[in-house]
Image: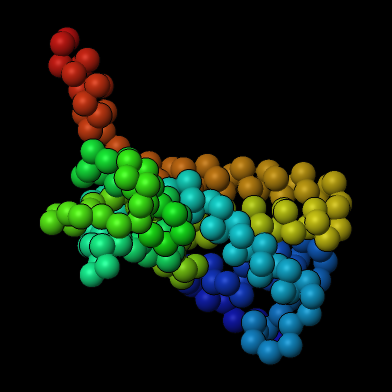
Length: 196
């Protein structure tokens, strides 16, 4: 049977097959239908690893000054896929609890404000909305963890760990090149450099 090569970013099916390969299982042709236990486990490992790595916050899944409007009940709801949040335009101590903002100053979910809150948020994005370097790293990270849990083969884990390290380096390089980091973006650094 001939295989078809696709020239697209790593899809979920390919990531699952990469994970199954680490335990010596045959690749699957579809994620639909009656998948076996290993396939289901691999999907869970991939999802968990994606959420964990995205919670770090990368340029592709973070938004600054994200508007959080006050609802009619005085509560502020946040998107369900929010992993981290920091409210940036209030002096009150505000945190995320569940999918709502909570005011630590007034000990309440209710706010009285005419100005919508703005926050720096880290969002949990679906697999297909993430860049290729992220997908590759997460797939290899999940594969190593999956193999360790299912088989526990030390040699396979050590080889996968090397691939994982290389993929993480590529992801960090991607992040550095797309984020446009600049020392002048930090006031303390800019202030120190301007003295020279």
